[in-house]
Amino acid sequence: MLFKRLHIFIGLLTISAFLLTGLYMRLNFPDAYHQNEVARMMFRANHVYLLFSGLLNLGIGVFFIAAVKPIGRRCQFWASVLLLTAPVLLGLAFWAETGDGSFERPLTFLGIVAAISGVGLLSIVQWRELR
Image (cartoon, rainbow, N blue to C red; front, top):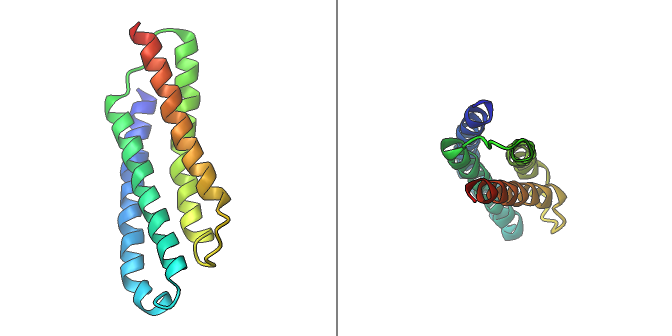
């Protein structure tokens, strides 16, 4: 039940961060990045990644069902840790990796890998529980 609530809370918080970063871009882009399309597109990509991770956490929180088997519960714990970490990494990436226009984006990469790994692990647990 804790992870269910935590995923919903983090999901809503991340969606709020998505709205705030959208407002930030709306207010600052015309002046700051009109000449640098690469930086502008990287901000937009990380902005959408925030939405992606927020919706993942919200959806998982709404439909979270605790596993019965101990191994399933342990796997759910680590999957939840990965999924709850993804918005933090992607939020940091929005501010730290996009302004210089570099294509090296380790935080973004780690955030996406954490989200995909968490969903994959939860999917395996649910599949095993339903068999």
